[in-house]
Length: 305
Image (tube, rainbow, N blue to C red; front, side, top):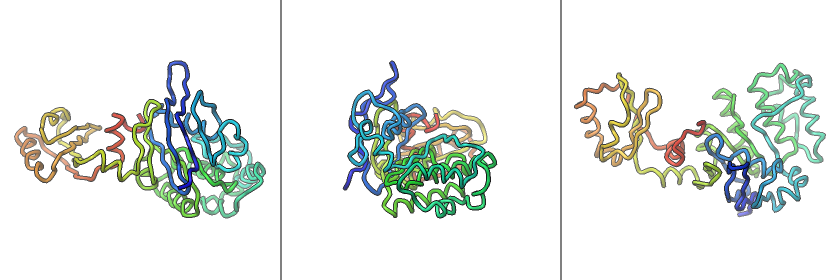
C-alpha cells in the first residue's frame, strides 16, 4: 500500500512539556485515519507539524514523500486543511469567501457543487457574520476541499453540528474516501471515529499508546461485557470492585458501569449481590464494548478531559 503520510520519531518540546514525544506512524492512500487523545495529548501539535504550520525539534514528517519543512509550499498544493477554529472576514458573503480561497490555488474543485454539497446554497449570498455556528463549520470544511486536495486534514469537523448535520458530514467524508481521497481526522466523538475510521491512533502525553482498526482495538482490549446500571439511591462503584468476576468499574453521574467477565455465567451472581444489599435498580443496560471503553481503559480519561 502507498504511504501518503510518514511520521518517524517526531518530537516537539516546550520547556519541560513534552507535547510530542517520539511518535511514529504511517497513513496509507485512500484510508480514513483517526487521531484520538485527551486534551493536551499532542494531537494539534502533531497535525500542525505535518501541515507545515509548526517545526519539530527532531524526527521527520513527510507527505507524498515531501518534507514538512523543506517542501512546505509544495505540500500545501496537495492537502486541504480544516482547522479547529477558522477566522473569516465577516463582511464577505459565502460566495465571495469561496472565491477568495479559490484564488489561492492553481487547481480548484467545483465550487458550486461544494456549496450545494454542504447545504449552503441558500446562504451563498449571505454575509459570513449572519451565519450560525454550524453553518460556519460547514463552510470551513468546504474550504478545505476548494483545491481538490489529495489528502484532507479535518480537525474536529463536526463540532457544533446537530446530530443530523453531523451524519450528513459523515456521508460526505465517506464519499471522499470512495473517490480516492485520504482523510486524516481528529474528533471528540468516539462514535464518529468508530463509524468512519479504518484505523485509529490513540496518543496520550505525547506518546502513541495504541494504533489499529477500531474493531481490533475493541477485541484486543475487551473480553468483558460492560453493564450500565442506574440505581434509585446514590452509591459508589467501589462496592463492586472486589467481585472476582468484575475487572473494573466506572461511575459517571448516576450511571455505574461494571465490566464483567463471563457475563452470562456471572449475571445471576451480580443480581444476587445487588439484592442482598437492598439496592434498587432503575435501569440496567447490557451492551457491547465500544471505542470509548477502550479509550477509557488505555488513558484513564474521557477524550474531553
